[in-house]
Image (tube, rainbow, N blue to C red; front, side, top):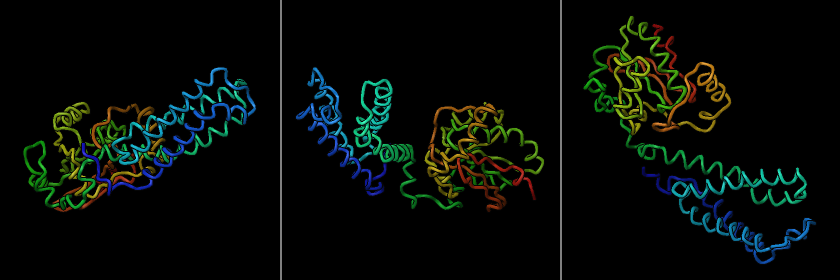
Length: 316
């Protein structure tokens, strides 16, 4: 999948990675050239084999070369950032274990601050941005390509073989945009839809599920929830999501406390579980009631945990 152009990316990750590169190269050179300095400074015995400690310096220096290379495009070279981030997580864990057992003095931890802790937030943020960029449909980076609702309805085909415009012209249509197929909230929505089908049918409301999987996988997903007869739309490029102005979530909308709590309830307590990511994991869902070609009710999700408020849909 194509990633966004450099112009679409924030500049701070490049700066951070270059600073990390310079730091690693300087720290590595210090350890290689003066292997006993840190031991003398912290008041512990010099190593019997300083060459081993110098090898650590060489490894740290090599990381610096990798960071400098990744600074050109961190979304493409995210594995380098990930390996560095993992090292900065495991390093403090190893230190605390050694300090608690008396193998290292606590003042050795000053090196952990500059080597590891101060990089946690920027490296974690870079990985988040890289994942968001690499899972996004290309259209997300050029919203001018997003069609208006009328044009999108006319050009988007449903599993019935009709365009969405043709299908919705025959009666009230409830468009249900779900998140990626593995999302526990997607599963919760489909379970709710299964239970609400009789009520929707009593008011002559026909649901149409919009998803990001292939048409075959989408049908299998509906079959698994007893919704084999429900019409669906495969929309992997999220063009219909864009046309209906459904946004990609921010950190708080995807990983906020409310989302975590509702996710625990949906996945564990209600037994919906989770599955493999299929589609854009950052895309938010929503629902729209269409009558005579126009939107009469809209329920865009405010966060990843929002499901369709069917009671509002059914209220005249």
